Image (cartoon, rainbow, N blue to C red):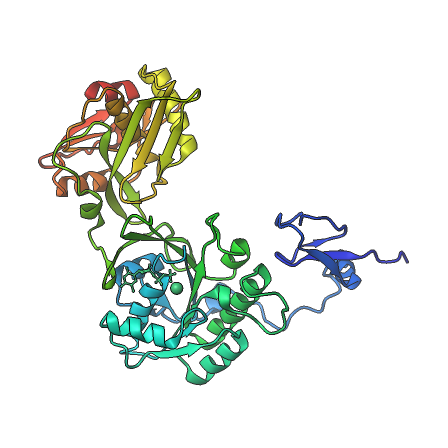
Length: 452
Ligand code: TYD
Ligand code: MG
């Protein structure tokens, strides 16, 4: 029999390779491969026919018992919305975000409110219990019943939680936690992954709803993002510019609801406040219409949202013109400017083009294409668009305007906020009239430019 060759496993993703290399071929992490016991490789090669089968029995779907899924309201409607209708027993939700964005504040508020009616345990590895209590007092939260624990050892936390049996457990933050068997420092990929895995096992076994707080690195990723995201049930990010008091929470993964559902909050001196009518906030515009400004109706999760988009086109002082997009995709901006040139006859070459979505919102939808080009044209000609105009629509490479989903709801939202004119894709024009709204359906970019 041939001598078994050695095997290497990756400490980040657990991938197996027969050769050593500096970078893991599976997950792309550097310097994570280490020699593994040779029998691991051998059993991987042997296949599974030799195994006796696990103890669990196969069931048909009809046999699987379903208890009605119980949702716990968090007392914050916007958070419930992102979670898909409230907390689920035995689930694990990660709240990610930059340090200082307000994760601890938000969860402290939620925990204090929930602790009035159920047992809640808040575990912190970052702040002292005194600091947390002082903050809760200052915010005037009901703080008498919330249980606090200052601990970073995951086994100890699970032990305490198993004794105390809270219905909700918060871990602030996952980067400060460590499991005993692993030598690596807290915050590293293996500690974060093993800690999250142990806490997830605890959540499933005990039926506790667990919140994990996770800090995002500069590059916008949680430490060990890939390894975490598939273990846990819900991943949401809390975002907000440092210059803006608005905070936006978005689910990027949710096993119990829709993703991309958006919750909006404001950080005030009295903690995080929910914003239940976000369109009204993002639209606080000056009275005078300004060149380069337009309002678009985007679809966020399950509701429309009106946001202002601004464009500034200026002669470029440099040899090459700059295209900068804040809150929108940079590459898409370059592509749309090419369409504007080719099919709208408007030249932006040699000029800097800056576009910005006001209020720190990030628009990922293609419905921003048409308003973006209208804003660019408006800035270039230094002519304001009417302040009661709203627009949406996807622009194709041939200059055609394509429909987007939920056109009627977007128009209704705009009408509700006092908009009287709309430029929309032909296929999105509603059959029955929307009261007090003049709608201009367009099929091609040229028609839209003529309309303004
Ligand atoms: P925090 O919740 O500690 O952030 P994270 O846990 O995400 O790191 O929020 C800290 C910031 O929030 C800090 O810069 C101060 C600000 N803040 C307020 O503006 N108002 C408040 O009522 C509180 C408690 C904090
Ligand atoms: Mg914190």
